[in-house]
Image (cartoon, rainbow, N blue to C red; front, side, top):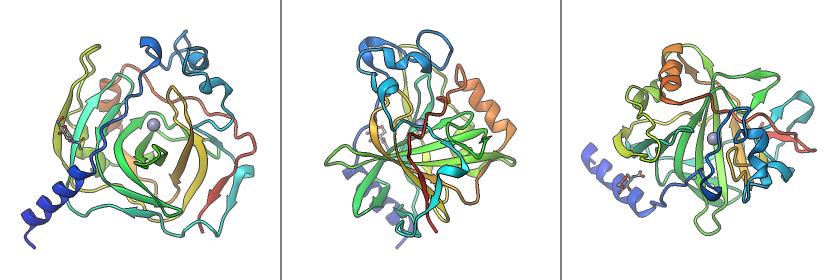
Length: 260
Ligand SMILES: *[C@@H]1O[C@H](CO)[C@@H](O)[C@H](O)[C@H]1NC(C)=O
Ligand SMILES: [Zn+2]
């Protein structure tokens, strides 16, 4: 098959699976933020509709310490992703909380359940901390099971180093945030995704932004951390009003199960 043909097949398949994007803003027009002020993480749970941020017992991100890490042979050795090899159409937007890249149709299978990607977005610094280490950047690829709306997220933690070729696909032209008139526009198709090979950790958690809904299946890639450069971090910092990492939440007996 010619490249253009493969490309056309992929576009068709992806459009059929298009599910729309999720919105992270909510409760009666309140805009959450990451400050120590009234709309910051410590107070998200005080707003109607966002109570789970305060009362939830399975919240994310998690502080990952040695005592909660357990290997689990029952986890599939290989993550069940079925990501196309062809360029993936994508739209980008800046909602003032994060840069979001809408990507449809990437398939992730967990325990025979198929989830499909909606969007990916970034946090700086990382939301999850591992063995006391906060990473400069964390990327979340959000998938949804169409029938139930259940969410599964893959998280990649970046260390400081060389430019990320993956981020470079959309980082050089980050949209700015204009309050009240959020724009979404197409960008060049994403040619390749971050690796889903190697060891990963799994736990049940929540959205890390209001309404902090639980029942989210988290997968954290723990092998071969990708790098991000200072220059790329600066581009992100220039595009967002503030750092956007929710503080870590108590494990409450949860374990991070690690594939072997
Ligand atoms: C990008 O936006 C266009 C126009 O709204 C839409 O038709 C398309 O499905 C979107 N693509 C993705 C991957 O979200
Ligand atoms: Zn996130």
